Length: 432
Image 1 (cartoon, rainbow, N blue to C red):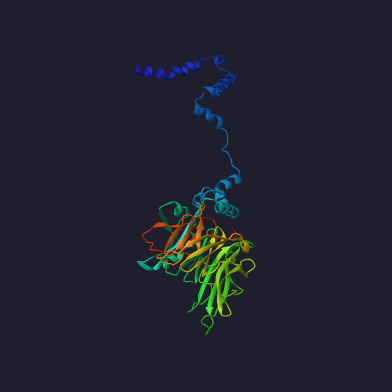
Image 2 (cartoon, rainbow, N blue to C red):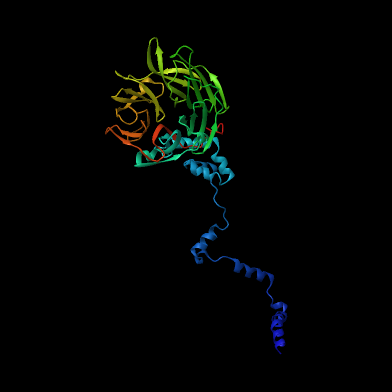
C-alpha cells in the first residue's frame, strides 16, 4: 500500500503535465514577455540607496586619469612614498624613474618654502670609540621647531671600515659626496640608499700632501662632476705647494686631468657649489705677503677666476666659505671679537654682496668662532656648526640656542652639511 502511494506521488506531476493540452501551453512570445517582466529592473525610486548606486555604475568602466595628471599628483609626494609606489605597476615605475619626472620632483622640493624635505648631515664622533666617525642625518625643520632632535645613521659602504678620516665633501640635488682617507670617494643618495664608489683618483699619498674635493652639476652637459685637487710640496721648498686637478664625470665614470689650480692652492676645505661653479678659499702669496682670496672653477668651461670680495674693514682675519639658499656666503672672523656673515645674492656681481649678520665671539664650545652658516630660516634665525655642536643664532635678540640631538652615540659633531631628499641616483646617467 505504501509503495502505491509513493509511486502515485512521483507520477502525479507527470500526469498533470501530460493532461495539459497543446492549446493551454503559453506561446513563445508570451514566455519572452514574461521573462522580460521578471528580468527588468525595478524603478530606481523603489530601489534601496545602495542598489541605486550599483545600478547606476554597474556597466561603467573605472575612471581613467590622464598620465600627466598622475605625474603632477605624484610629483608632490615625498621620496619614500614614491619608492613604495614603484611597485603599483610597470607604468608607475617607469614614470617615477623617468628623467623628466625626477627633474620635476626635484624642483618642487627645492621650491618648498617650508623645507619639509631638507635635512642636515652630521659627521659625528664618540669619545669612547675615538677611531670611528659616523655620518648621520636629522630633520632641518626639527632643529628649528623641536626641543629634542632625533638622528638616523645613513647607509654607505665605507661604514664597515669607518674611521676618523671620513669627510663629507658636499651635497648637490640630493647626491652626497663622501671621501674616505682622502683617496676613496663615494657618491650616494641617502634617501634612496644607493651608492657608488668612484674609480681611484691615481694620486699617491705622501707626507706633506693633501687632496680636497668638490661636488657640482654641469648644466651644459647635464652631468654631475667631482673635482679633486691634489696639493703637494715641491722638494726642498716647505711652503711652496703645487697642484694636480682632475675632474670626474658621472656620465663617463672617468677621471680626466684639467688645468692646474690657479692663484695658489686651496685650503683643506671642500669646494662650495654655486651656479655651475666650485669655489675655494685660497691663501694667496704675493711677493712676501699672504692674503685670502676666493677662487672659482667654472665646471663647463674648466677655467679659473678670482671672485671679488666685499670690503671687510679693519681687523679682518681668516675667511671661510659656505652656501646659504643657493648663494655663496663668507664668514669673516675678527679674532676673539666677532664674525661677519656676508652673502653674494647674485653670483659674480660685487654689488650684490650683503652683510647678513654679525655673530659675537662665544668661547668654550670647542672653537673660538663658528663655521660658516648652514641655513637661515624665514624668521632670520641662522643655523651654525659651532665647535662640537649645532647652534641656532637669533640676530634680532642676539642669543644662541643649542640644537639638542638625542643620540648617546654622539659626543661631538665634526662636520655639518645641508641636503635635500631627491630621486637623483648616482647609478643612473642622464636623469637630471
